Amino acid sequence: MTNVIFYHAGYEVCISAEHMLAEALDPTKYELEIVHFGDAKDRIPEAEAAGVQSVPALVMNEQPSNYMAVAKYVICIFGR
Image (tube, rainbow, N blue to C red; front, side):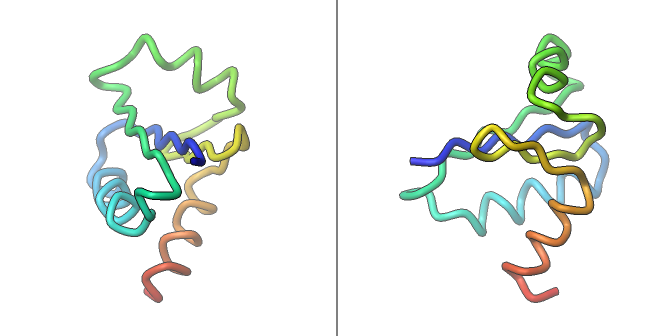
């Protein structure tokens, strides 16, 4: 199973992406963890250590992706 962490700061666009990712990822293949920095400020150093420079960000297979990469992924899955 592939671990996926979605870091965000709670903005509307972040929450929308969170919901789309949760619906799009096959739970038999991906374990999705959502980290909202408003609720988990102590996780910021972890995200920075993983290479996250801005949010929303997705870390999959220990590789960070920024907002544009997340958006492209969601568009690819949903065709939007």
